[in-house]
Structure formats: C-alpha cells, structure tokens
Length: 589
Ligand SMILES: Nc1ncnc2c1ncn2[C@@H]1O[C@H](COP(=O)(O)OP(=O)(O)OP(=O)(O)O)[C@@H](O)[C@H]1O
Ligand SMILES: [Mg+2]
Image (cartoon, rainbow, N blue to C red; front, top):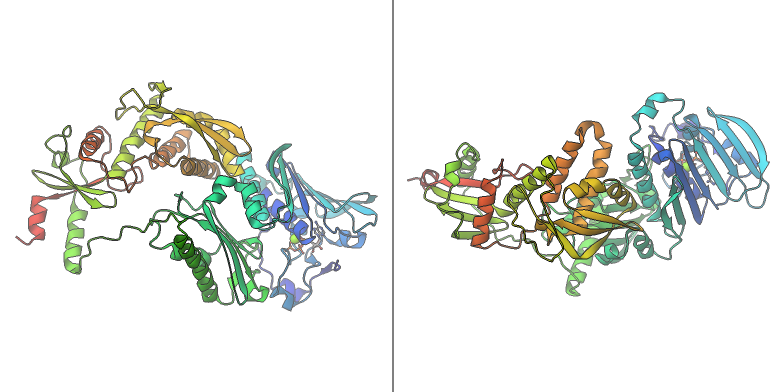
C-alpha cells in the first residue's frame, strides 16, 4: 500500500474545486469509492434516517496503518497520486485527497481500520480534529459519519425529505455496483435490506441482480475493442422503449458519468429505428486509456473531458450501430423503422403558407361548430394519413385529428374527474371484460386475469409502495410482491393493452421527481394531475393501430364531452381545421 502524503501546492491548484459533500448520498459515494480503491470485495452500507443521522460503510479492503490513519483526514492527503503527471493518468476512483477531510468538516466521524494483520486503529474526529485514538481489533476499514451538517444548519435545511435522500443513496450504490460487479454490495436503510448484490462473475449477472430477468432479456449484449478503447454494452432491443431517460447509464473506467457526446452517439445509432419521442434503455461500460480522458473536471467527478471527442463518438456510434445490425440479421430484433413516407413539399413558400394558415387557425372552442361532423354516432368516412393522423371532412372543410392525442385527452379528463370527486363510481369487474359502459366522466376498472408482476429499481419500488393510495385513486391496484417487485391486479380499462412496466416506471419516476421538487410542484392535487397526464399517455391506442370509422366516431363524441378538447394533456393539439376558404387560398383560387 503506497503511503499517504499531502499533495504539494502546485497540484492542489490544479484540482477541480467545488463542493464535494452536497448531501448524504455524496458521502456514501466517496466512502464507497475509497473502499473500491482499497480493493475490497465486500462493501456493507448502513443508513439511518436517510443518512442525516448515520452513514456507516464497512469494507474488507487493505486498510490503513496507524500512521496513515492519522493523516487520512487532512486536506489533500492521498496515497493515489504523487505528482502532476499522475493527474493525467488516473487509475483510481479517488485522487484529490479531499473527500475524507470534507466529510469530517461537516460531521462527527469515527474510523476503525487495520492494515494487514497489524493491530487496528480507531479514531474519532469532531469538527475536523482528532479527539480520540485507540487500538482496536478490526478487519478492513469501517467509517461512521454521524449527524451530517450538524455544524452547518443552512445546509441541513437544504436537504430534502427522507425518501428523496434515500432515493439518491440507492441511486449512488446502484451506480457504483453496476460496473464493479466483482465486489459485493449490501445496503440497509433503517435496518431494512434494500440492496443485496453478492459478487458476480460478469456484468450481465450484476445487471440481472439489480434489475431482474425481464429487464436484461430486453437487452442486446455486445462488446467492441479498438485501439485504446473498449466497450461492453447492453442496449435496447426496442421491445419496451421508454418515455424517459431513466434507464440510461454510462460508465467510463467504472465511474458513472454524464456525457452528451456518448449519449448522442447512441441516439444517432438508433436514428430511424425508434420513434423520436421514445428513449432506448442502455448500459454502457466504456474503458479508455487513462491518459486519453481527464477525470479532473467536475468536483464530484461526474463529468469527463476527452482528449479526442470525435474518436470516442465514432467508436460508440459504430459499436452500437453494428450491434443493432447484427441483432437484426439474427432476427431477435424488434426495432421498427419509423414511417418516413411523409409528404415533402419542395416549394418552401407553399410550406410556409400552410404553416401560416395553420398557425392562424383558432384551435377551436370558440369556433366549435367548425368541427361538427354530420353525426358522431354513425361511421365517419375517414382517411388514414400515416403516423397517428386521420383526416375527416364535414361540409365546412377538412379536419385532421391526431387520434392518439385525442384519446389521451379523453382519458386524462376521465382520470381527473375520478380523483376530483373520488366518487367510487366504477365497479370492479372480476370478469375479463367490463360490463359497465365507460363515459367521458367515468371509466371501468379492468381486473387482470393474470396479475402482472413488474420488477423495478429499488428506489422506484420504494416510492410506489409509499404511494399505493394514490395509484388506487386512479383505479390501479398494486400489491407488494417483495424483492423490488410489485404485482398489478387491476387497471383502468383503457390501459388494457398498455405497456404496464413502462407505465409503472414513468409513474415512479414522476413521484421521485415530485419529491425532489416538492416546493415547486405544490399541493398533492398538482402531483395527481401530472400523474393523470402520464397515465393517460399510456392509453391503449398507440401509433400503429388505426382505429376504424365507428371507433373514430366514438372518440370524437367522447372528445366533445371533455372540457378542453383541443389539446392533449401535454399541450399538443388534438385536431386542426382547414376550412374550404383556406383551401381556396392555398390553391390560389
Ligand atoms: N476505506 C479505505 N481503505 C483504505 N484506505 C482508505 C480508505 N478510505 C480512505 N483511505 C485512504 O485515505 C486517503 C484519503 O482518502 P480521501 O477519500 O480523502 O482521498 P482520495 O481517495 O485519495 O481522493 P478523493 O478526495 O478524490 O476521494 C486515501 O488516499 C486512502 O489512502
Ligand atoms: Mg476518496
């Protein structure tokens, strides 16, 4: 074990400065990284009161002798780099010698550590100063961080609710565990086991432990090497594309990193294969020669700078593109080419003329009569235009509807009505189909013949369990199935064919977000409203299923019963109108 020394001034000045300890999760991250650098094969993490009361990280790594233990909490004390050149060739998680001193300055810390078989050292530090040193018998290193921010009340106040802080902690542990699959990670929160990840033999096994079989089965596994770069990637087959970027992970040399270049390379490889508003799941483990990447960019090391950005972009792009192609040939590939048979106008002036007309159109309500077709009850002659667009006519002109947006609006208002009045009107059907006719103000509940299990990430699982009553209000009946799995028993009828895993994922993501932004979002009703919009978005009529004319008639009738028929809950128009007069103008008559 190299000895710890204090970095000289010229190196200190080159270290990316900034806040290292923002919240309990930052402490957990720093302590785990130290345990990984100490070559630990088991890391136990215990959290009490969201880390505000106590964070304990124990490892079975190489530990510290007495001399090093006493100096480890000094600022710029590190065993990981010695000179300036080392800063550009970083092979360890830590390198600044700042983490322990930053933690010790805002909490009460105890460390028990022992180097090899020597007698262990226990030290206690309060206000950054060593208060007690004694011999103790221990293995590896255990660090306890108590009363975080006790001496900086302003920062303590800035912390969010326990569930939000716990979410960040679980996120940090998960992201540390994914690339470091050879190390066992065990996380307990308030004595409850939250993550139990024994050492694995490969990435796939670790991903399986974290996310479950269903998740990994949806991914294509690929590896690629070139010059100084290598990648192991798990990427979406396109079976269950997501509405958010929640399940996208980039690791560079085993660190979780946020990087636009790499994200962009992945999206570019998927271009034309997935709809523009959908997001692929991906987990990328990228290894790059340390002198080609600078980790000393961000105080919490979450960003990097590449020596050659283009080289990294091309490498990732080709690796993913190739994997998608090969998988396609093997036909375990489910990505569908986007419908690109769109009308193209070469004449720009005509196009902008159309734009103007459309922009000038009052998107209804005050002009509702324009949209009236002779009867909504019979079949309405319609023309499918592609995507989710359908054209219908009435005596006044042409109406183009986006039937997905339209259906979203109808179901959104149904959900809103339900939570507003909580009328308990729906009857739970035990049969496969509903007998009650849903109206725009009501919907039937569909009880799944085979309740669906959905495996989630730990944080998502926890947040859903905390909010079962809200889900119930929407007619979504969910039970705890243990091991990060929930079981869905009933859903609103209109979600019958929806991707329920994707939907629960979206709901959980929003609940977590709303915890983060409690103040901004405001009362619970706002949260429920936003959730209603997200649930409505999973409405069963999706892009590729074209409704027949009687269905269209029914949808238009239901739309009339909504309060705001012109826009979907996300603010996109549900319909636009071109009058005969507009058409005459366009044809320059
Ligand atoms: N769990 C541990 N096991 C063994 N040694 C440790 C452990 N934690 C810390 N150390 C030692 O204490 C030193 C200081 O740790 P600290 O986290 O403050 O700095 P660092 O890891 O070198 O750099 P950084 O600030 O970037 O994390 C480390 O360089 C390492 O030698
Ligand atoms: Mg460190």
